[in-house]
Length: 392
Image 1 (cartoon, helix red, strand yellow):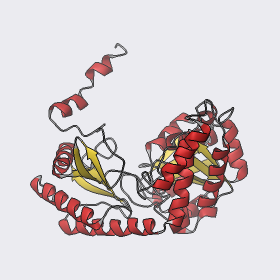
Image 2 (cartoon, rainbow, N blue to C red):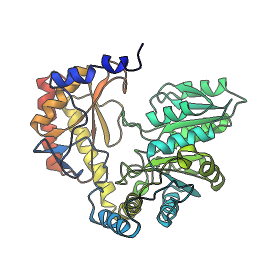
Image 3 (cartoon, rainbow, N blue to C red):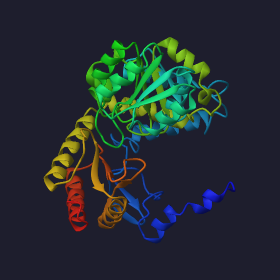
Image 4 (cartoon, rainbow, N blue to C red):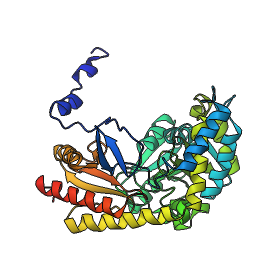
C-alpha cells in the first residue's frame, strides 16, 4: 500500500462539505466574546472555553502589548537554553500559589504539559491508570511513555480499585481530568485520592477545565474538594479560563525539578512567547480581583441547565459550565449545528470517536459574560431546532 493511499481514501470531511453539514475549521471574524462574527453574521457563542470572558479584557490585552514591546515577539529558543524570561519564572510562582503547590513549570501548550509530565514520570515497568474518557493529551502522554496503561470505566471507582489491585507492587500513577471536557462532570477526586493512598499510588489531576471554574475564586477542582495536598500533580492549561495559550504542571519542588530537566517537550520545543505569558499572568490577577466573573459563570450555567432540562434535552451527567446536549446520531448532530448557526447560535458537534457511537452531542459551554437575554434567546433557538429535528 502506498504511503498516500490513506490520503486519497479519506473522504469523510468532503462528503460533509458536499452535503452542507461541515462544522469544523469555521473562521471567526471577531474576538471570542459572548457573541462572535462568523460568515458575516453576529451569532451567540456557545462553543468557547473562554469561561471567564477574559480573552478580550483590557488589562489582559494591555499586559500582552507591554510584554510585546519589552521582549519582542518570541524567545528564539527553548526554556532549557535561552528561552526562559523573568516573566516565565514570575508566572510559575503565581501559578503554584494559585493551585496550592510548592512549584510550577510552564509549557508551550496544555497538550505538552500532559505529554511532558506523563512521558517523563511513567517509565518502563510502571503503570498509568486513567479514566477511559480522559483528554486526548493524557492518552497520548501515556502512549509516549515507556510504561503500561490501564483504563478504568468512566467514574467507576470499583473498577479503578480493581485495576489498582491488579498492579500491586508496581509503581503507578492515577491520571484523571478534574472536569471532563465532553461530559461536563467532575472527577470523584476524594475517592480517587483514598484509593491512591490504599494502593500506594500517586494521583495527577488535569484541571484544564477546572481552573477558573471550580474552587474558591477558580482555584480548581482540588481546592473545591479540599484535597490539594493529597494530589501530587496538578496540570492546567491557559487556553480556557486564562485567556491565552500554554500549560503548566504544579507539584513539590523535587518533582518539578525532575520534569524540568527530563521532559523532552520542555527541552526540545520553543518557549511560550512573552505576550502569551504576560496575558496569563494578568488573567490570573483579574480572575482573583473580579470575583463577580466566577459567580456570573455559575449563575449562567444554572439558568442554561434549567432551561435545557425544562425543554426535555438530555444533558448527561454535567454539573459544570460544560453542558452536553445528547443528540444521538452523527448526522442529526451536524444538522442541528447548521440549523443553530442559521438561527443565530454557534455550537460545536461532538461525534465518534470523541464519544461512543450513538452518543453524539452538542457541546455547549457558558461564559461569565453571557447576558441572561443571550442565554434565553439561544435556548429558544436550541429548543425550536431540537423540536424541528426530533431531538426533543
